[in-house]
Structure formats: C-alpha cells, structure tokens
Length: 397
Image 1 (spheres, rainbow, N blue to C red):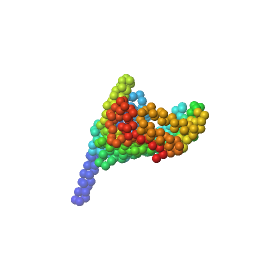
Image 2: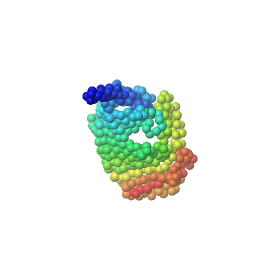
Image 3: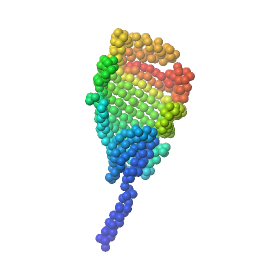
Image 4: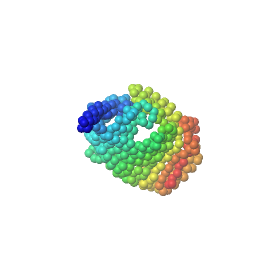
C-alpha cells in the first residue's frame, strides 16, 4: 500500500508540473512587445527576425533599431542575448544581462569597431505610460570594451572601455548615476589643412590621451537634477569640468518633452516642426528653477603653449601677448556695464595669465531663480544677469 501511495504522489506531481510548466515559461514575443512599448516612448522601435527562448535566456535574432519618425534610418544590431530573464508580477521583465554583438563597420574611408557591449540589470516596464519610477525602461549598468576608429588605414581614435551605472535611491526617490570613458587616445597627425596642422604641432596636440567622467543624481519628486561632474581630462592640456543644479525636471516634464520631440519628428514640415518645438520648449522651461552652475578649467600646460603660438602669429612673445590681454579685457568688459563682474574678471584673468593654474566661473544665487526670471532679465536688462545668478569668476584657487 505504501508503495502504491508513493507512486500515486509521483504521478500527481508529474501531472502538476506538466500543467503548470507552460504558464511559467517565458514568452519571448510578449517580452519584445513590452520592450518596444517602452522604446516607443522615446520614438524608436526594434524589429527582429525571430525570438528563441531557452529557460531564462531569450535570444533576439536579427535585431534592428528604427526611428519611428524616420523609418528609412535603421541601425542593424544583430543577435541580442538576454540572460537571467524574469517576468514580474506587473507584467514587466527584469533582465540580468543583455549582450550585444561586437560592432565591425568597414567602409571605403575607414572603420569602426566596438567589443564587449553589454547592459546589466535592465528593467522593462509593464506599463511604460505610467507615471512612476517602475514605469521607466532602466538599467543598472552599461558599457563597452575597446572601441577603435580608423581612417585611411590608420587608427585615429581608440578607447579602452566605457562604463555607466544607475542606482536607485532609497524608497525609489530617484537615481544616482555615474559614467566613465577611459583610455581615450586620439591621433591628429592626419589633419590635412596646413594651418590647422601647424597649430596642432605647435601646441603639442598631435597625440591626445585622456578620459571623461560623469557623476550626478536625479530626484523625481522635486525634479532636482545635479550634475556634480562632467569632466574632460587630457594629458598636457588640462581638465575641464562642468556642473549644474536645476529643479523642476520631474518625470512629467520628461514625458512632456519626449512627446514634444515625437510630435516634431512626425511633422514633415521641418520649419513648422522646429517652430512648434521651440514654443513647446519655451513653455516647458517655465517649470524649471536654476540653483547653480560652475565651469572650471585646471591647466596642464596648454595655456602657455597657446599664448606662445598666438603671440608668434602676431610677431610677439607669449608673455607680451599675455600683457596685451590684461589691458584688453577690462576695456571689452566695460561695454557690458557690469562693474562688479568686470573687476572680478580682470583680477582673475591677470592672476591666471601670470601663472596659469585654474580658472573658475560659478553661478551661485542666494536663492533658487525661476527660469522665467532669467529669461526676463536677458530680454529686459541683460547687465543684471550676473547679479541675478550670483556669478563669480576666480583664478588659481
């Protein structure tokens, strides 16, 4: 009797598994439908030859990216492999890794190659038209391996790797993001214009080497976007960093901007589309508030080289040109009728030209400034903008 009971339990279990198995199997076509619905928000779609499912791995065959408003413009991707795919309760999907094929494009003038292209932790929303963080097409990481560009048989640009990360803040309040492009190398020796070639050689820019870094955050409720770092750092040139802080860039603002762009792209009358887009952007800008911004350049020898080169073009030394600029700057600024800023800039330029280290232009208003106020000042009293935004110019700090 005991053996018979166990046998019946085994049969019941097998029947249950056979009945429930198909319900839990991944539907590759459904996944692609949801992915395309998410891409459609930004005006694009993915076509493909077929979808194969093997456990939690989905392979998209012959994928091609198309811009909805420009169907003749396509980007052939190839076979895309999605691993660790899980369907969520809301009808969306989570994909552990997305691997794209290497890029190898060769034409008569040159070639482009990129390897190890991958996305990690991609979330495909069940309802991309919703208004929450879970209704956005997101990723946790994305990057590539080596990228190489050649022209006329010679390598003119290369990059060791790129990496981007997107991290959800606590309670899904927003995102923190960062990215890097490392091992950047450029070869400008093939520039053919004689004047440009001479300048490149005199400035020591025949070979470029550096990296790009990005770091910031986006808080959804207030629409506060902080770009703490957007830096271009190149050897023997310097480091240029841009940062800004604005509010009002909410999820609703983002979706409204996407809709405006889609409408403009769909309009065959480009002049009319551009005018409509401009008006839409003007309307959206009314919702933004300026909190601060900064541009900073840290010199790594390029300033002296530039002065020497520019001075030689005028028959003077670099030091003589620097002295001339010191006298010219206050004269030019006097026409703007901003005496306080004129004194700051003159002092900063004099200090920088005497010993180039760093030059910083910052805008730090005492209180956040609505964009309509900035636009009003620009049209009515442009000389008040520096005081409205709290503009400061400093050097070597």
